[in-house]
Each structure stands twice: as structure tokens, then as C-alpha cells.
Image (cartoon, rainbow, N blue to C red; front, top):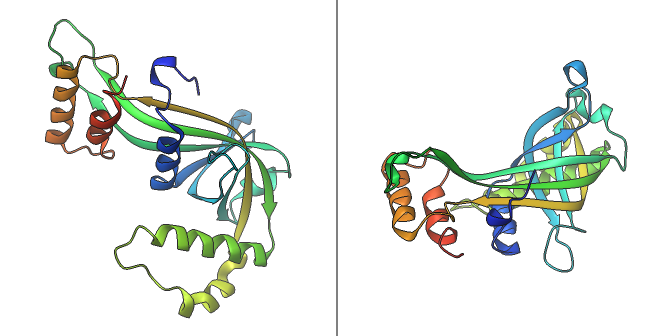
Length: 214
């Protein structure tokens, strides 16, 4: 992903928050698809350990896919894969601009993490990854679910998945949030997104919070 200078992430905290809040990621690996196109799987990917500086490079994430999915068999330990996290995004109509003629655009926030993968095909590792995933995702629930009574069920079916450890070696992020527009136009973009209902996440709040910082 190309990082436009104007749309770089405003802070590492914003990048970290996006990954935590939008853990349903894409695992992209080389080859395996039609005509040797990349293979992509949608799956939850959660943070196991941040780097010492509080960022992702040098940290570890965890994920898993179904064992029937052949992507895991195409991967070798140490191979590079791409993890794609998509944050709030939305269409911006020229009706939000004060001048005409103009063109529409799309506001969005996204994070790409390149990682060295380790395939964890054993059941013990699978249990660790699925329980960590539940712990992380249940943090967002008003009343977190206690998985204790279901651990035996987890143990019975965990052979149906293959897990991964991802060591992050590169981070790229784009936060394109109408930074190039004057304040009154950004306010119109925010109002239009809220009136429409922000169907792809609360992009209005991000434009409001981040778009005016530069």
C-alpha cells in the first residue's frame, strides 16, 4: 500500500486502535490462486504482543483459519504474508463541497502489516490462539462471555483449524480523511456521512477527529 505523505497516520496510537477495533483482517499470501494470483482469507487476527516501542514492528499477532482451507499448506515458516485491516470508510459526494465543478472521493483508514509467518498446526497451539482470540474479542462485549464451560468443546473441535503466529516486519497506514479540505467542507462531509448513516463504520467521527489536525 502506498503511503501518501498527506494521509499518513496521525499517530501510532491511532494505528494500534484501528487494528484492535477492526480485527477481521485479510491474510494475503503469494500464489495459490488462479493463474498464480495471491491467496486471501478473511479471518480474525488479534494482537499477542506489541513491540517494545509500543508499535507493531517487532511485535506478534495471532490468527487461524479452517484446516480445510489449503492456504496454510501453501505457507512455509518464515515466509512473508500481508495482513490487511480496514477501518471506517465512506463515499464523499461533491454535494459536500462548496465549489463546482468537483469530483467525488472516498475517505478511509487502513493498516497493512507485513509479517513473517509461523504455521502452528498442533492442537495445543490452536487452543492458545482460539482462547486468546475469544479473550480479545469478548473485551468489546458489554457482558463478556466466560468460555470456561466450553473449553472441552473447544478441545474437541480445535483440530479443525490451523493457527499462525505473525512476526511483524513492516507497517504501512493510510488515514485519508478529507485533510486537504477546509474546515467548513470537512464539517459538511461529516454531516453528510452522519445523515447517510456511515454504513462502513463511523468515518464521520474520524474525519471530525483526525481530518482537521493538519
